[in-house]
Amino acid sequence: MTQFEKIYTLQDEGKAFKTVEDMVDAMGGEAFINGTRDPLIPLLKSHGYSDRFIGEVVAAATRVSYGQFEDISVFAGMVGVAGVQPGLWAVHEGNYKVSEALLKESKANVYKSLVMSVELNSTSEPRETFIIHSVPWQQSYAEAKQKSKDRIEYDIVIVDIPQHGKPPMQHPINFAGFDAKSHVPSGPYPGEYRHTVANFIDGVPKASTFGLDNPESLPDSIIEVVEPKLRFRSLAKNFPVDVTPEEAAAKEGYVYKVFSTEPLDDEQVEALFETVKERTFVDWLAYPYYGTTHQIPPFELNPGVYYVNAIEWAASAIEMSVIGSKNAALLAHQYWTGQSSNDDEAKVEDKDEL
Image (cartoon, rainbow, N blue to C red; front, side, top):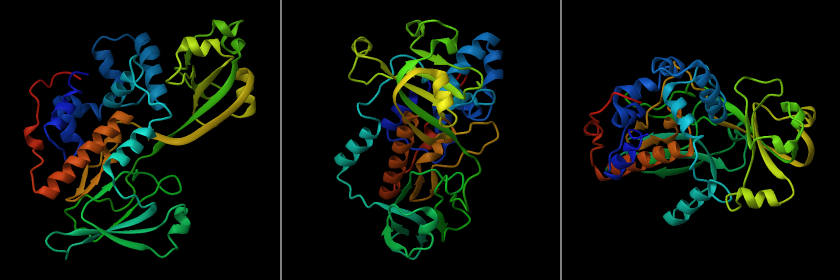
């Protein structure tokens, strides 16, 4: 964590990075770069961690964080383990409130539309510009392809939507007019995002399913380290950020958050819960599938065009998105003002541990 935290000092100093590899190199050197490609389990074993610790503690952490374990990369695995430690922050009413507050503070104009393509205007003076082709928001991708497009010209473009996968699961943007020296994708990047379903259930868990007689004997969190028949990964009490566990206990019942690989059907819910007052779920593409062969796209697709989501292919968390977003903002500022990114100067000396 000490090496990871160096990114905050580097960004406070105005350092920006054109690639994810440059960023993790500045944080932790070759060990961090290799960590985006090497598998986690052999590294842990080489450092003396037991099979039991890896199979129970590490597997629980990475399955909750990323829905995978066996072939996860070192860097993603370590971020996943960090995410289950105590002392983490939560935002009242949801993390989206952070984006809402930043947007309000920036006083930016917001145009809700579905971007179909980004076209390079190389004839613009004194520097090239970018033409955004879009359709009104709420169109499906299939419908949007058939609609006439609005055309707006911009000086800088920041892409903050995944460019991996295919419709309807993802929304690929077409990049036109860029030369071979650019890094804009010619189509969706290879790689897929993993489904995670967050089931929220107001009810009482069925203790007998877990070999107990009384629901009060159940721990606050239950994490599966293997893929169970009921297809859930974790079951945990979900406390609002403005309510203490003691206050929640004084109320009648709890709301449980159950992570699963797909929506739980009635039979599965009945196997997990004795009684259910209310239930809902959110099915989403939460994070990439982390292997050891995937390629990580760059932050800078072209001077003036930046890709925030590149950082997700090293590891995914709201904190990673914040770091990627700030890096894109720094790159955009340096591009606009003619400054150097100085990424070659941002290397660290102690590179021996992750």
